[in-house]
Image (cartoon, rainbow, N blue to C red):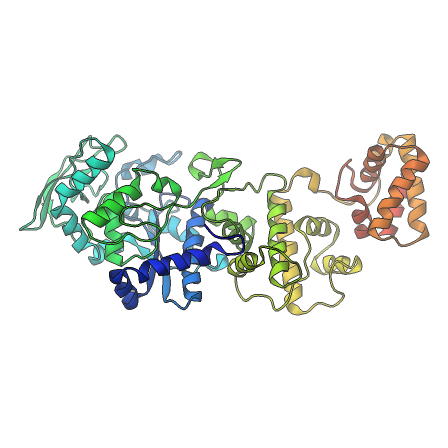
Length: 548
């Protein structure tokens, strides 16, 4: 889609602008209302972080359009009029709400809000931390305000045309009218069927069937009602294009599952074209679906909190800084799969390394043939004001070593300064940056780090550790203690000393390292030994080695 030196958001923004400029009706709409970037989510339960990819993509597109001097806004709507259609394990008390709109179901935490409000707010309350600039909407409220009234009438008046579209695309009979009332007796929407439409009186006749769907039971009520102002909703595949024309949507993409041939986008663009006579939003046209964005996978499988794979959007933000997660999503083109599992040994460490590389490129401290792209990725990933200069960088892994040795942040920064990893003097911005990275390291150690990354420096060598050491190990350890007493080492110099000790004592490298780790950490593996010794301090290390 884009050259290696161009950021995908800028390229897509240019495509969006070109589409509008070539279409007089869209151009007129944009001149009046600006570029309307839209997305929507059904708050059926905890929203997983994979949904965040769409939110970030739409946020980025709005920002890229604004960067090109265009008036643009991103609006996210809660599809809270969708019906509750799946029993919740361990919550049988909610089974009575099956078929009811999420907007009309009590919150699972008993807070007094609705089910929809609870789960939607759980995620969108974190938007400021993610740097997502979005106006929030309720689909239910939009129905109640009458926003979709014209589209509802248009859809019902064109029932035959909509049937033809469904039958043409799916190649099977379709006999439904495009409206689902909320039953006036039981309040369910998932069990109702419209049986007739009177265009003169503008009334629908409906039934709340006891066996309309397998997952909910209606009450059997039959009635008539106006379809306007929130008395019901359009079926999803009709509702999508109805929203486009009702709201003036210029941009709305979605996951690739919606863009499969004969999927919901295929139906949507056909209805938008043939019923509403509206140019479907980018990346679609009246005849082509375009392409949706790829999924975020966990170890090769699509993320799904309902199936126990992946992490919630809100809860993941507690474990990994949202700015780093935002970088993850922006640094991949939308049509690329992201396979990310923070519990896999190196995924988070490598993500931080990639972020730090982009940061160095942004500040001109590192060259890259992808410099233009990486600068924009960093710029649009950053939350809050950008740093004035390249921050003092330490890798997440090294930060993890430091926080397990230091007593607190002040001590950690002193250790980093002693090893000359950071400047001797720090301004407020630099110190804040470092404390953020140290906090991230502590969180990583507490949640996702493998056991081999965790350690505790021993105060004294336990008797059982001494018994595990071989004669060769004790001899090599004694020689190391002597060498540490002779001079202050640098990292590379000390590393070379290890191999000189092994050669002198005839011990294998692996046996030597295992013995020293046992004395220092009480386990046979640990972080890079030379760096560990210098970080702990040669005096303390020499004292421990002397006890072996």
